[in-house]
Length: 216
Image 1 (cartoon, helix red, strand yellow):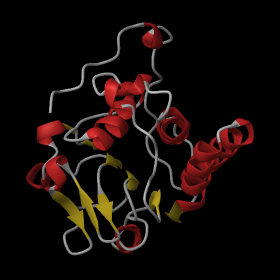
Image 2 (cartoon, one colour):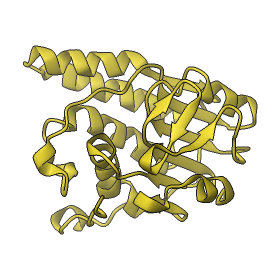
Image 3 (cartoon, helix red, strand yellow):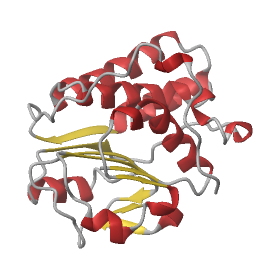
């Protein structure tokens, strides 16, 4: 499952990067924009992987228009699945709950996920160079999972790519954002957990126009 809300600047930014780089490799169900609702999120539980971005809290994960689609008291079937949430604070309570209820592994963040969004790029957020230092390490770690590698390897990619960007970042404020998200990144559960390998993107994919984002 891929859950991508599109109702405000932060969700359009994070979802945009996943639409550009992850959605073409994902398998249904794909809940985009208005379809990212609890009724669908709770019932479409097939597959071995749940990837989602959206606003969150220690105990809740939200879909489109901040509708709570998953919480510590309302959990869909996660048995045998890997769950990766790009969402604030969900590694505090929700992540541990998902692992206790059978998720193989959970990747997420203990604190707020913080990055800069360019409001002029809401229609093509994947082109946002301000968001790239935070979003692309997340994309790279997600692609590691889709390559059939372990969650531990994917988490190492996330940490390494944050550190690589931190080593060359000259802007003090941007460096502080990278460092914050690096310290907040969390892996719970079985580090050796893997999902079924997805096909690679074709070599020419990056040369074509990116997918459209649905209007707000």
